[in-house]
Length: 215
Image (tube, rainbow, N blue to C red; front, side):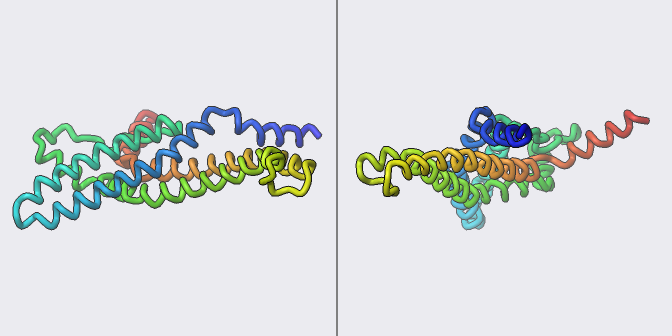
């Protein structure tokens, strides 16, 4: 009985955890931000490459390149703030790269540059999936919770008031289960962001530093 009570407490406690609502906020932002990223990157890269022969494309591509780096930095920071995860810096700038050309060249050779571009492009379909799942679960949960009210005004799905009350009680569990599912979705997106937006160079440097410290 005590174990069952603990399970029920942990199941219901999801509605009172701050991180649950931070996760929901992150998932909610995924669609509009992903749409904006996709439109900007596809338009900018397409125009840049199509205008390369006119010499207008090169500065345009540089602008898009610098912009997607800043957007990736913003996404990394947002994931840290809202999802509560640790993500290494996008890259570790070597001290010998002094001028802007060397720094741009270093970034172009850095795998995280291209991983971050892929992340930003995939943010669009991921945002659609996240929003669709969220709206479905929210609509289902709210619809069940307010079924007694809908029954009173004659639009409920139940045949009796008692049945509508039972649907409403079940809706509470569906709502809590939905929060757990959305937390799982946020967890998967957090791991994806950590893999795509974190520099492996920094991770490797930290590992070597720890190993050296031990000896």
